[in-house]
Length: 311
Image (tube, rainbow, N blue to C red; front, top):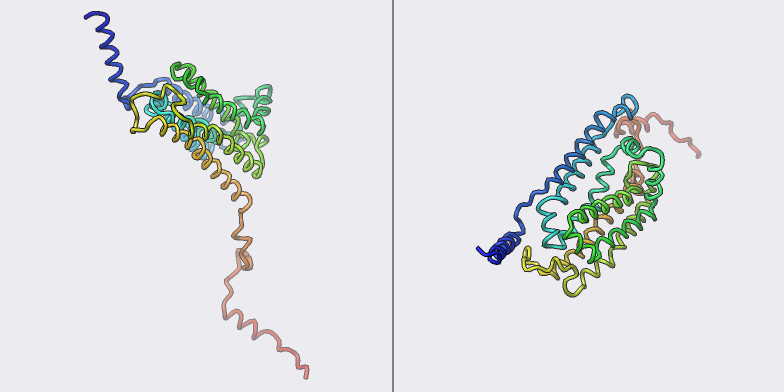
């Protein structure tokens, strides 16, 4: 065969392969990362943990373990086939869902999975701790998080990352890193870095307001904002416009609903705790109190002295 015909056959084969969005693609680096983090977590709680806590104290709670399993499941789901491949090659809405998982869902679970002693072992009490303390201040963490979110959705950056694997994963690492700092004042292991309940509510509410501008821009944009997604193969039959509108809805509504749910939970947990007991007009009973019966009332009346005759 001539070189020209060989190239045409190769291009036709590539086109046929790319026409199947659901073809399996192996990502060994994701499995290696999840396996390494899991092994490191087990090593820390089994080997380092018993020496880092007081005698008789558990190194890790059941809540930590459940949160870690959830965090690893989200990391695998967001970074492996099929979501990663659909988001990188076909749908920007899938790309937005992937970023939501890496910035809104994964980081708080990762922080909840980390016991206080473990984070103190990892960052120490020197320069690294001071840097985390500074970058976790609500204003700084919130501004940096939203700045990273804006930059990672600039068309030039998105288009470049889709054709560059190392850049793509580097952006994901930056998103997760600054998301961890953003969530530190809310659910971080260090109590001294957390805000009060009302401060958390205000902080999360403000974070839900910022994505309104980029979400509106995506929703009302005319034509393809990100050219690599303007391809003939349309997953689920969604056009480029529908795909972008769905991405904007995920950014604004999905993130907003999640943050508002947390705000409501924190508010009612703090300010409505014990509300039912406070509104109860029944006399509080002691542990050894017996229920009052009609016979008890009749006996007390019979034993009481009659009122004096004043006539």
